[in-house]
Length: 84
Image 1 (tube, rainbow, N blue to C red):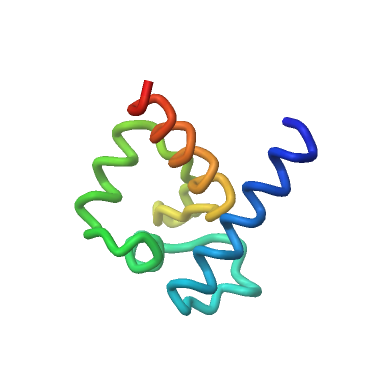
Image 2: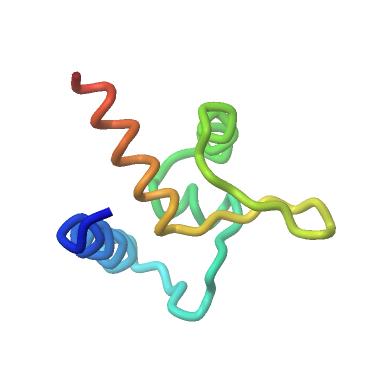
């Protein structure tokens, strides 16, 4: 990934946080509900994204967690594929 691409993704990452008013400054990973709130979609949509390949991790207890930077990157690539 080029530096320009990294800055663009970081820019989008910051804009999403600011636009949605979500305070996740010190949280590296998000729950399904937090991610759904950021994107203003349902948790069911997040479940569909998981089937479609959105990156996520599972905690030792089996809970699903998302890294917003990875999700933004995946979402952008997915949207690019739809427009081609």
